[in-house]
Length: 406
Image (cartoon, rainbow, N blue to C red):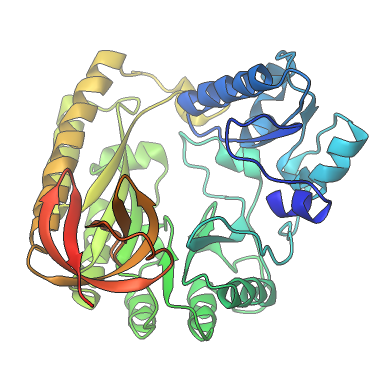
């Protein structure tokens, strides 16, 4: 969307600077994300009351009526209208389309604009898994995969501009290709991306564990640019809870996936999402989750308290869990995650690691390893977008500090 404005002569300003047009790309995964989106919308008009305020994204798809009550909003656009955003701004119209009518991936073409040292490449949209707690299939519609040629062209273009790492993302990445007539899946795409000259790293965003098979891992580990960091969406470590969530695997199956990845990538960092306080989650069920997570020992866990979403099956389930119980369970898992992260990081003290530096902040250059550990080096200011070897000296607050090896 930024590139569309740039191509039409607009200038992008920094966040919270005065602008003529503000675009707020909303999320609607939780009630908290809805509230944050509303706060940002109000903040934009406070900065410049005369600006045109545009709201786009998933919140629009499921909460249009709520947004229409906010007087500050000038234009409301659905997910299928993002590629015409400048036209809507210039015409100052207010309309929305139904996302479920979209049959093909909405391709923006090659996006050359990027403000980071890594680029996020969207390869698919939509989801047809219908987990009982999730509003996303209603907001994003069914699976639509982006054509491989379009993806390869975009990555090739931005690599020529100096980008060294791409993050492969989508609403449900594991479903990539299921809507194609020919047999071309995610692993086929990754093999083709790996061939792009000049690209150094390929990082996968959140992936469904069911896609991780022996064949998938055997093909994946042959790709030298794949980062040894995988975010596996677990949600619960209890089979009974997983069944109510409509997650289509068991903890036993998940554990086999972990074993496959750790065998293929000895230094792999595994991260995950966990929902606590899902309707009907008893103390016994939570204990099973805790024990399973303690066994797996993820590098980091993103812990969410269950948030009731109107229109989902879980919203009407019995035995909704009170907030105090959710908070207590969340604190327990966050504490475990912190212990795991500290333990994982400390094994690298004294070792040498390759770091892709991203920015300089408060006297430190910082960046990430292939397994997504933050590393900081003091005093260097000219390292951005370079990959350097760093000898790790210490671990402080879940970040590694080291010295640059010349």
